[in-house]
Image (tube, rainbow, N blue to C red; front, side):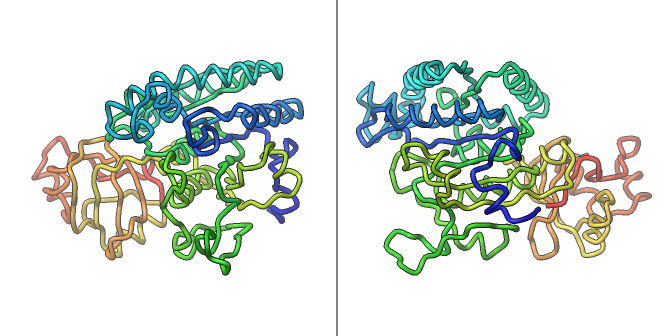
Length: 379
C-alpha cells in the first residue's frame, strides 16, 4: 500500500473519498458542560473544506449527555444513574444537533441527525436500513451527524463508547477511513502522561498482542466513556472492514487541517478480503455463546469449510439459532465468529457426534453444519 506517512496522512480526498470523523465529549464540551462553540466552528470549517475537495464526511458526535446534564443541573455530569443519563441525553441531543445544523449551515452544508443503538447495527435488517439511509444522505451532499441513542439505550443495547460506534458506522457506510479525534495525538508505547519514555507509534500494520498491551482503558476527562483500549477495539472493527483508522489530536483549533498539515497521528492500516456480510459478522459486538473445537476442526475452518458437530468439544452460553457465537481453538482463543445453525441445547446434544448419530438424535430437524461457512468469518 505504500508509506501512509506520505500517501494517507491527513486522509486527503484524492485517496479517501468517504471519511467518518468521531468527536468525543471531552473535546466538544468544556469542564462546566458548555459546548465549545469556537472550536466546533473550526471543525465545521474543516469539514466544509473537505466537502469542497470532494470528500464525503460522516460525523459521529458525542456530547449529548454532558450538555444535557448542565442544562438540567444533574450531578456527576448526568452519569450518576441510568435515568439521569437518559434524561440528560434527551435534552442535550436537541441542543447538540442544533449546534451542528447551525455551524454546518454557516458553511453552506446541510446536516442530518441519526440516533442509533447497538441493536440497530447488530440486527441484520436494521443494519442494512441504516446503511441505505447513509448512502442516500451522502449522495444528496448531506453531512450525517450520528450519536448513540442514549435516551433509550440500556446496558444490553449500548455500544458503551462512540469509538466503536464510529467504526461500525464506517463499516455500514463503506467508508474508506475513520478518524478518532482524541485528547492524545495517537497510540504510544506507554501512557504518555508523565512517562518521558513513551514513544508515538505512527503506523500499525497489524493489531497484535504487543499493540493491545499498549492500550490504556482510562478516560482522563471524566466525561467520555472510552480510552485507548476502546480506540484499538474500534481499529480492529474498521480495519477488518477494509477501512483505515487514525487516532489524532483534537486539541488544535482546526484539527483536521492540522493533521493534513503534518501533525502527529497513528494510522491503523486497512485489512482486505472480507465480503460485506462477513464484515458485518466480524464487527458485531454481541456474542451469545462459545463453541470450543479440536485441532482438526480448526484446520478445516482455516481451509474455508463449515463447522461440523464432530469437531466440537464443548458448548458454552445460551443462544438460539441465528445468534452470534465465537468459535474457539483448543486453547480458548477465538478464531472465528458466525451464526449458529442450532440453539444451545441441541448444539450440546450433537457436539462431537457424526452425521449418522445426529440424525438419530434430531431426526428431520438435522442440519449438516453447526455454523455454515457462508455465515462465518475467520478472525
